[in-house]
Length: 209
Image 1 (cartoon, rainbow, N blue to C red):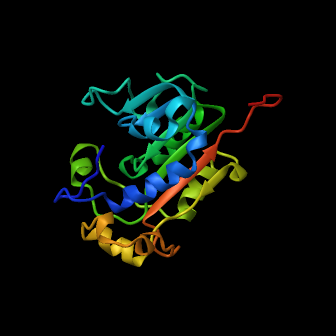
Image 2 (cartoon, rainbow, N blue to C red):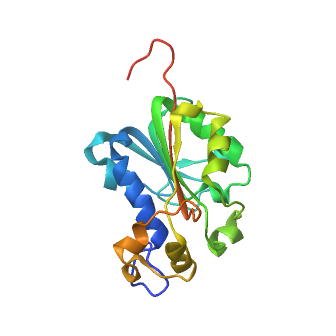
């Protein structure tokens, strides 16, 4: 997963924020880990803390997938299976996102952590639109309400990354190498380019980590 722009000369701006988030949350990437599409981030940020790595894909077109399932009806995945699930930039491509969130909650072990990101500002992804659809853009408030229907509110943290400069640059196809660190990392909550989510499944009564 290199995430180069069309000219091949830099990293996509949204990936800068996604990787910044995962680096800050790397301690939660441990034990049995499930990642959507590939396990690049599991390896990069989990390292030796990971004892088992699964890759989820919606169909059999991905030869690296160890689990083929649709998150909206993934009954084949046992409940309470994973210590961590990494689900980056996926929610916008799932029409029934509420059902997908319920599955993610179900298959997490008690005490396990969902590390997800969602798109707030972006162009249509034509690749995804033509295969399974491109449906949603989110805000921090919509994600808090959505996940709060499933997780206890105190177990959810939703933030935002982005600003007007980074958003305009991203929509124009510029890369991280074409902005300064200050332009990238200035935070404006009114321009929510990428929305990182940390949601921890509560322990059952009497359990401890």
